[in-house]
Structures are given as C-alpha cells and as structure tokens.
Image (cartoon, rainbow, N blue to C red):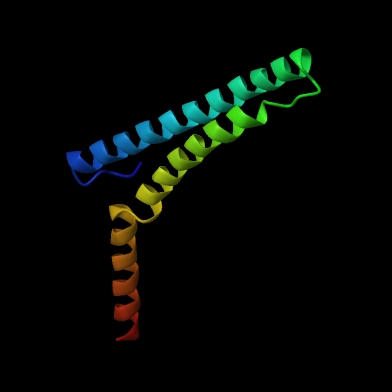
Amino acid sequence: MEQFNNNEDRLKAERRVEELRKFYSHLLTYCVVNAGIFLINCLASPHHLWFFWPLFGWGIGVACHGLSLCRHGLWGEAWKERKIRELMKKENNRK
C-alpha cells in the first residue's frame, strides 16, 4: 500500500473521496427519482410527456456537479504537480 507523505496528503485524499461519494449519491438519487417521475408521467398522462422538464433541469445540476469534480481532478493542484514532474522528467531524459 502506498504511503502518504504527510497528514495533509491523507486529508486531501479523504476530502476527494468524500466529494466523489457525494457526487455518486447525487447521481443515484437523480436516476431513481427521475425513473419514478417517468413512471408517474406514463401512468397519469401518457399523452403529455412533461417528465423531460425535471429530467433536463436537474440534469444540468448533476452535470455541473460532475464538471466541478473534473475541474479539481484534471486541472487542479494535483494535475499541476503531475504535469511539472512529467516535464521535468522529459527535460532530464534529453540531457
């Protein structure tokens, strides 16, 4: 198992896991609730499909939540550190 450099690294990792857990919980809730809304729509008024509105509106929120995680994971501090190490390694290999 990989050792953490210090307690701060562990806290960052724990926060990241908690952020991911919250996103997956949000996504699961979105899917379950919208499936229920779809069923209600089909049973109550199958000729008027209104379930698209909450699906679309809440979907924007889920997408933004997911993008915020990507922003932190792909272009955050960890990404910068990985990129710096990668460029330094390439530069050392040239010499």
